[in-house]
Image 1 (cartoon, rainbow, N blue to C red):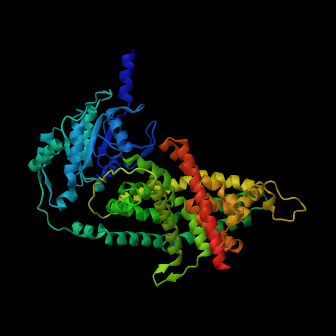
Image 2 (cartoon, rainbow, N blue to C red):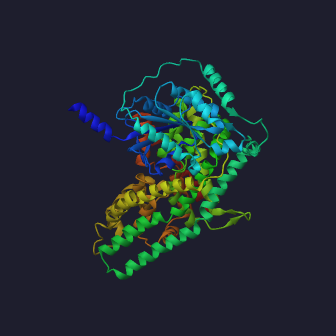
Length: 624
């Protein structure tokens, strides 16, 4: 009976397919095409490496597809690659070994991709080779005889162009054949030591390429000419900083109409509720709690969309990988390398995935330093705070006929974070012995960003932001409204009502500690919920200042209450702190050290306090 039950359970369990391949080979694009971009994101058991899975439609059996972390070999050098290898071998507890492996290889860089394919083939597991970016290969004059290549290496070879679904049906047809031959074998595999040297393996790959691939003679191409500029040690840096400057200018200049429209919408909604509802708790809760809290953060959605749009366009065009190579040399002067660039760049979106992305760094010391400085990259959660204060205190003024002063200020804040991270990394590295790990990255071809990919990426990020608004920010707005409303002011009150509330008591208790920074008790209250999510500081300020008229109304309230040195000091504080609880938690998990987590928390708090104090004192001297 137990055997029969086991067989029935095996029949009900979905088939497991896994995409494996080099970074930037098109795995994720193919994953989106096969699953319809309906990904379920979690972590692998016991580790914090992201597990991305989805169901494949159109097969005769229920089938799950996993997008494994990118790797160049089964003989791994980084924690991220370790997870991919352990999953393939069935060595992760709670995860069944995949039934079929799909190796995704960039057809324009077959030599590098075939190394992993040959290692996978030695495992004697069902394996399919998806030759991706075949259109780019053909445009470069590369011709691959896939039929003879398939016969020679003994596995099916499918030509794919993931960006437009070409080859996806053929790949599904091949997967369906494996679905009918499912064995249910889930025993773990053992990876023996190398049976041949790396040189012998590459000799074998070179022989395969000579037999099945026709490549044109090297001729100057537009991509090469573009690389001569983009990767030049001087011109390349000029191009990179120009791109970043344009991005930050656009975040302010282009998003303004949409921001104003949303701001006006929430203002009208607040006015409408004020008009139709009688004076009382319900009206106060809806107008000063919900609309002031949630609306005060949603208004910055257009700027966040623009920021991510630029990042996705740069990533999909193939430029970001080149930027990593370009920055490798200057970053080594700071004790880091080009490997740290991608985790640090990811931290501009959120420090949590940025810190998790440090798993691709082989050098443990470099990885530790990158974790320590990643939160200094300005995450998107700080953007609403920056936008609010810059919009309130920095005039809309054009500099040199081209630059927007508000955009330049925003660029300066981002630059302050990067400069501080560089200084901290340099200091930390000087205290450690150096060990060089050469950078190995595959340069993808330049290509026009695909609207489909950019749309999927933007949709995911907008969803993440709106989910935070609907959960964390909404919950904290309600709590803040309660703290700012109760207990009520006494009949003979001589001060404002909020000063008698729990929030007022808490703010007044904290204020002496932050007085040298110029912070008042309302600003101190806003620091507390920003530990959960930094953008909540905006809704907290709207609540404690009892402003429900949107971004402009809150900005006007701050302008009339704060001096310019105080506003600059508050900006300086948010360049460094507070680190949200999620970031501190992921640092604890990634370093597995209470001591390192304490160092991370206190050094950033100390840096924030000093930066805000110095900014306030210097600004006060200059302006008075």
